[in-house]
Image (cartoon, rainbow, N blue to C red):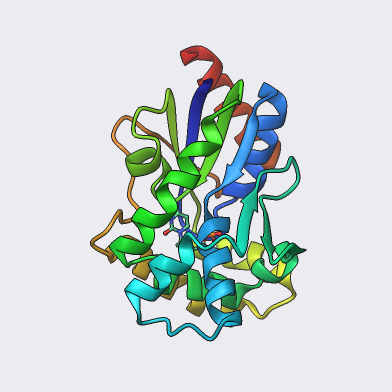
Length: 217
Ligand code: DC
């Protein structure tokens, strides 16, 4: 099993693009753990499972009708064999994912599959909210990526063609939910390097993190 680098942080902090590029430069595998929560949110919605039923959601989390598969471009989700990766990327699916992610049984049910991403890899870059604190507590390097709220919302609104004001509102709510929940709240892992990307461009962020990783590994 290879080493792990974790990149956690709030919504639209650039975790996905930065972690994907870092994995590419290191020649490692890459996984977005948000895809597990988004996938479950989408499956729950598709099967009309009530979003308040922790037991039913935990059962659905390990149902063979859906799978998460790592790829170099996206962490892909399949439901009954159909690729639903585009569908889970929508902002409202992120909102439902955040809503159901506070259930401890749901988190426990998704944990094993997330940890398995490390198997058979020469190294893994994993991004999410609790990668450095819960999923891979022994990760060799931990990063916490953040940026000014308005910048993050602007970035996400541009990507998805949404209004900035609406996106700020949705993000504030999601970040609040993700950082205040009792089970595995989003927080800066111990010994993590905190990178504020507000004044940096993409290349600078990836370069800075790559240098940090290479100094440690
Ligand atoms: O990173 P993302 O936008 O794809 O994540 C969607 C939601 O999934 C996020 O708001 C909370 C949840 N999530 C989580 O609880 N733990 C993770 N490691 C990743 C995502």
